[in-house]
Every structure is written in structure tokens, then in C-alpha cells.
Length: 175
Image (tube, rainbow, N blue to C red; front, side, top):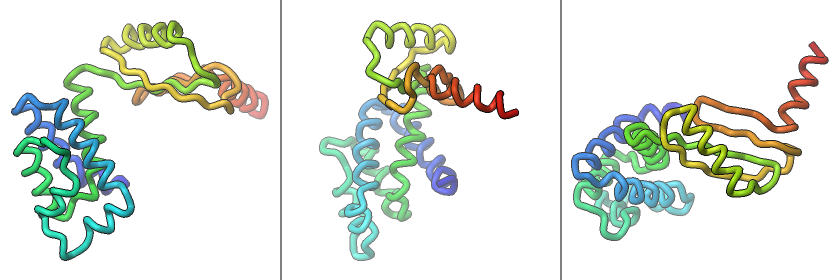
């Protein structure tokens, strides 16, 4: 995994630079996400790794309809270098670069049950104040948390779940 990230990083930087030069970061983001989903599919991987498949054919399989010429050339470079399998990592790194430039923090809120919209807005406002950036929230439900929520915002994890509190209490009592 870490080797794939290392190999993908220069491609992600190049893709981000190309997308910004053309003012098409959002379009590239969508196109990369689509290509990454296709490249991650096991059946597509078998086809894309076939030795008789040309680079142009591979690009035709994974490119989104209406993709700009620079994006198609980028995919062509990946295909020529047999790096299409790195598309999921490239897409992820691209999104990180885009979020950094656009000053966006992506946070995942996992709660024991569905949170009301007002509570999510409150969490979003608190995170915006803490990070000084716009916040994009993704929500998930995990009943094993028993109560409360876990907020994961990149390097910062805030565990306010009952499960987490019980685990910390158990550690304190055991130690």
C-alpha cells in the first residue's frame, strides 16, 4: 500500500497541476474518481492488465465521456507506464491536494444512531472554528459505539463515544 502511494504521488501532483492550469479541478476530480472506480474493479483489472490491450484501448475503457484532452493524455501516460492500477491512490492524493488548496477539511462523523441535521450543523460549525477552514462532513452509523460519536478529521480524531469512554475507563482501572 505505501509503495503504491509512493508511486502514485508524482502522478497525483502532475494531475493536480494539469487540472489547475486548465481551471478544471472539479471536472478532473470527477473523471479521476470514475477512472479509479473502474480500475479498482477486479474484472476491469483483469482486462486492463491483459498484454494485448493497447494503451489507447485502456484509456477508452476507463475515461469518462466528455473528458478533456489533457485528462486523456494523462491516462495515456499511466497506461503506457502500466500504472493504471494506481488510479485509486492517485484519485485519493488528488483529492487531498485539492482540499488543501481550497482550504477544505473533510471530516467523518460516526455515531451510534443517525444524527439530526441541527446537530451535524453544530459539529460542522465547531470544526470550522477549530480548523479555520470550510468543512465537508460525511456521516456513518455504527451501533457498536453504544452512544455518542467519533469525529475523524484527518490527523485529528475526537472520540466522544460511550464505547471509547468505557475502553479508557477499563485501561485506567487495569493500569
